[in-house]
Image (tube, rainbow, N blue to C red; front, side):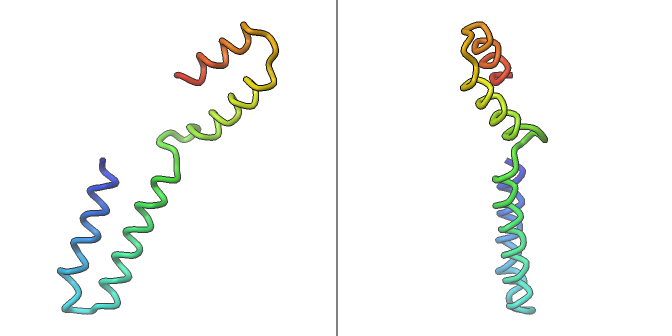
Length: 77
């Protein structure tokens, strides 16, 4: 949710600043929008996506049902 608020703020600044300098207003909107887009690519936790990829690989390689259950439980946490 905070990311959406930042995006709205950057996009709202464009019409407010375009009469002063259109190129700087556009640059600000692009920088703000791309920062928001990049925040979607980064997981919310520092180990979110890489940890799940590791657990997925381990789950696929595990043959023991107990090991698979443990890995599935670890992925839900």
